[in-house]
Image (cartoon, rainbow, N blue to C red; front, side, top):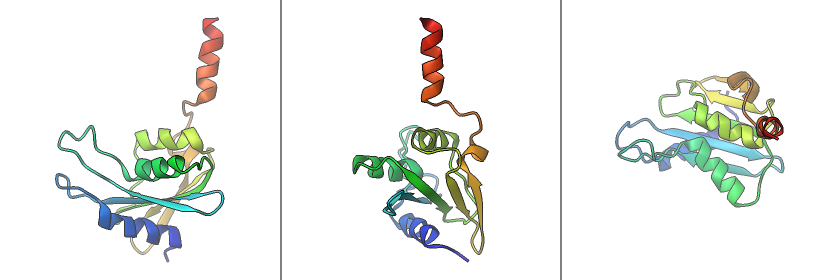
Length: 136
């Protein structure tokens, strides 16, 4: 069974620009007020400038003034249970608590993780605060 957020992530796959890997990724991020922002991966020939679906969704949400999120769904065209990469996990950690549910699409089923499970002991603002105190 799939939920609405997975369906929204799947719909985002259609907009993916992936001429190099041909591996489409879609994400749907729900804000605390229920607004959903979607994103897809956008590749670049040098790969390092490529945008990931999760960061596209986060950027759109933040651009529109949202800073609190309560659920993320991620899918790929392969329905292989993809999870956000380390870079996207760190970006999520900037705005979300460790208990953010992340739902990963496996086709007929989903697997759910928390952000804290996928990125334990993250670097956050408190890490930088501690470093500043040590430097004083």
